[in-house]
Length: 201
Image 1 (cartoon, rainbow, N blue to C red):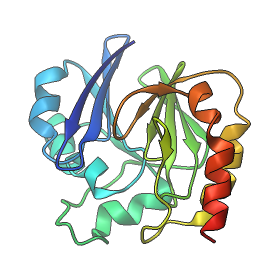
Image 2 (image 1 turned 180 degrees about the vertical axis):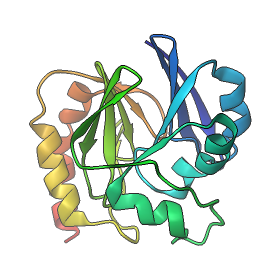
Image 3 (image 1 turned 90 degrees about the horizontal axis):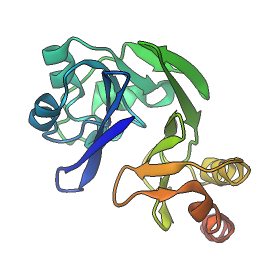
C-alpha cells in the first residue's frame, strides 16, 4: 500500500491518496484539493470521508464530477455535506454510500472498515485499511478532536475514548491534521483525555 499526503487550505487539512492493488482511494479531499488529487491518481475508485466538516469534504463534488467515482461518508454527517451548516460556502455533495457505524465495505476488492467514534461530529469515524488508520479529527499526535463545536457531543466523545482505549493491536495513524503517529502511542494519553473531557461537563 502506498500513501500520498498533502495538507489543504488554511487549516492544513490532510488529504490522502491510498493506492492498493493499483487502485486509488481519496481520503478527505478538503479545500482546493482537486488539482493535487488529479495530478496524483491513476485509477481512482472512491472518495472516503472520515466526517462531514467542510475542511474535509470541500472538494467532494468537484472530484466526483471529474472522476465519476462514488462518495462514502458516515451517515450521521450527511447533513453537513448537503446543507453547509457552518455557512462556509461549502459546495454541496451527494453521498453514494451512507456508511453505517462500524461497517465494512468492499471497494473494488479493497477491504475498508469505518470505525465509528462520535463526539467531534455525530458520524466521526476512523477509516481502517489493513494496519493503517485514517483517524480524521478523532485522534491526532498528542491530542484529540474538539468536542465543543456545534453538533459535537462531549458525552459521545467520552464513550469513543473508552472504546478506542480497548482496541487491541497497533495501527499507524494518519490524522486529519498534523503528523502521523501510532495507536499504541496515543492510547497512553487516553486516560488523561477522558479526565479532561469529564471536567468540561
